[in-house]
Length: 477
Image (tube, rainbow, N blue to C red; front, top):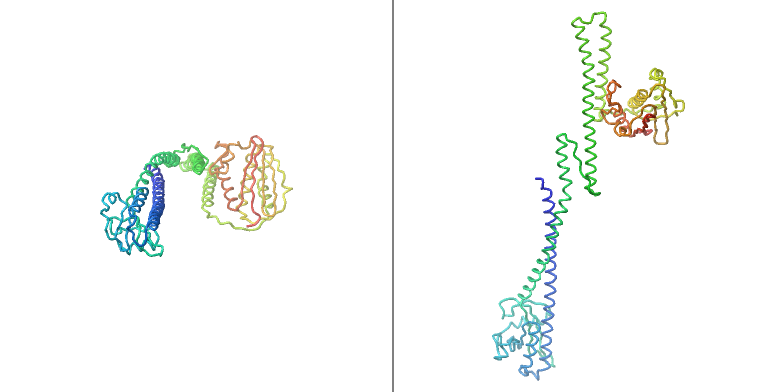
């Protein structure tokens, strides 16, 4: 099974090569066969013409018996050179002279006196083209040609007929095919070796990817595909490695999130259970129960926030949240969010700048969802700004888009962490005690809301200096 793709690829290309070479052989055979037939016919025609001309010059009156030895030697010499049979026949189709050596020895041969079909002879003369026939004297078909012998008065007194066996041509064609096949064996072997190596190299990355995919299905994300080329296979390997890296990071984040959520759920549930048990068994006296009920209330709110965040993510990812578009003043919304956090800002003595410079601008979007975006960004800015730090707001727009920028001083985000801050369940601060209210879903929700509105959000940061979030939204949808 592991070699199935290699075998299929190799077999397909091998068949293409084989049928291509076979087709070439057939075409060459057909073309050479036609060429051979044409050349053979030309040879037969020239032989007939030469003998006819010599005979016409040798004939005195209407008696073709004169100079028959001279005519024979001419026919014999032509037959020896061209390797064709040459006959001289009378007007009735009877063979008078034959170019074979037996005729010279006995002034006759097996062909002498044999009757040919005169209609076939006349057809050969009139058609003046390559014709295959037995001439009533051969058992196998022959290439044939004929030429009429005429006197000076244009009287037909006989014919010269030339013939050559088709078997000779077939033998030649077989020899040519044999030579072609023999000469093709070495290139074919080299071609198949090269083809085997090339196919193996092409399919090797796919086999490695298959093994890596099987390992990934079992939870092993350590496999990587070596990138050995810059072609489509190389690009596929790069994409596969990027996918593996993303899945590995997601798996790491998922495990971290499960651990964090398990801890966060366990703590309030343990607290709630302990206080309730204390109230039931009387360990906590009635006068102290309101205090502990307040703690239970706060812990339940924490659980509610976590569940609500996860439900929000689920709804946003499944597109169950339909955008309720309306026009509203974006500046007014930003100011409302900042004013709602006035006590937190004052408590940390944070300097807020840029609010008085914000332009009045109206956008068309889902007001509640955009409020959630702004609130999350402002909340994070306050949360991670050191005491006595600074938060700066900017809004700019053009004819199509509005851009919102919020920048805060503080520890910043390490450069290695920046690509992952918008991922689900991701926390830059790995300490649970540093931020008990965070679930690691806020920025992912922000990014999803902005994306659903057709916008984009980015982050930039320099450690121990600042962090800036910026998103762009279309003015109207």
